[in-house]
Image (cartoon, rainbow, N blue to C red; front, side, top):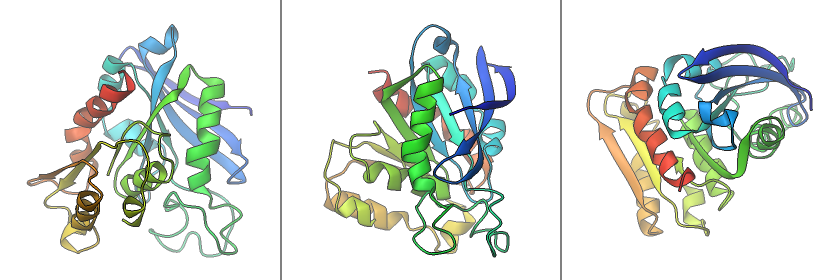
Length: 249
């Protein structure tokens, strides 16, 4: 599958790049960002997949999170895809900020007219990893997954539905039915997150499910932090270190 390079910037000794390609799963042009650490010039590297939140593109994480320094130090490739198909001309896909464009939720749609294009789960877990392995010095046996907001939930869906595929992941039904390798889940939650205050985020349910299944989960409630990328920036190094502990083992 052909890739078109959109941009390339030297960063922390490596390169932050963006590529575009025709997606077979989503049936549209898609962009993804990829950070290649200096280590990738001479050997294959583990890959951390980052899933962004509602309304984001591949740009939000690479320009706001400050992940490149830690990725460079730990020798990790970071891949950040867009959050949904774009330009599919489906009626209603541009009407709401939390449904349609920019809101793919990393699931496969089951209803018309969405099911032909909105297949972000298959794109993230199947098509994109194949693409990365074919075109970049990526170790296909060493992958992990993380994310923020909609992407944090998406990371859990992808990892819990594919036991053993990803080494680690951050972020309840899937927890209850999980049967696979030992997990190590790290979650940071801003105490002043407006969505937490509104009851739209339910971390206690996930913690209870993990406790019942005896799945280790570290949940850190961060006082004073909200839902923004200022919050992500503040703790991204901890999460990259968490992933690197397993990916570089």
